Image (cartoon, rainbow, N blue to C red; front, side, top):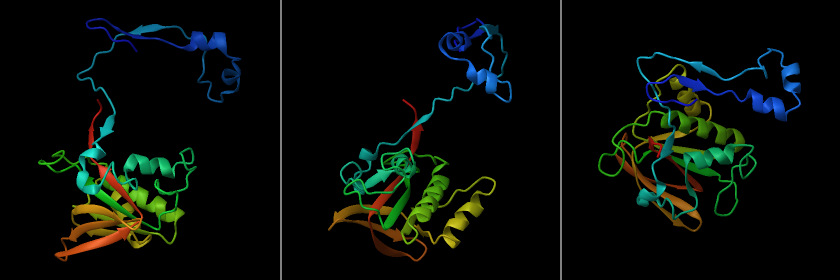
Length: 224
């Protein structure tokens, strides 16, 4: 659609182009009759109280999270990169492999609120979607690597939606995902493993977990 101030919106149909360049078989076999190559451009005038431009989003730069080794340690990745590892059309054909050596990680640490809810060193707001994305990633990992261990470092869990809390509880109770309430202070690499230093604020103790892969749930920022 092409919008011009104070003028109607022009909706440009692509049907004429496809009519000249396709065999039209899809129109014939569409069971819903939803394809019509005879459509022409039409002008619509729409009155609305508000206009929402859905621009999409970017992720908070991993390189800004130096304490996590992001950008320097190849096995510290963000959620979108992990999503690509899970995808059948991704670089590993759906097999979860470490970027550094192609080995299947036997343990993963997910770090939530990486760069978010942090007015001094990141974004001050909650990105809202990260808790559920991490829970989904943890479940999918466990379904592919059945004997793998998953740790999730979190500030608090914001699962606000129908069935969301039950989904997170399923990850904990049925799939053995270990949720640790506390911030991660630093990640270093030693002998091919990633040492994640953090705290368990429920017990008040410092802790360290050794994992093969770290996935950052980085803050969502407006698309450039």
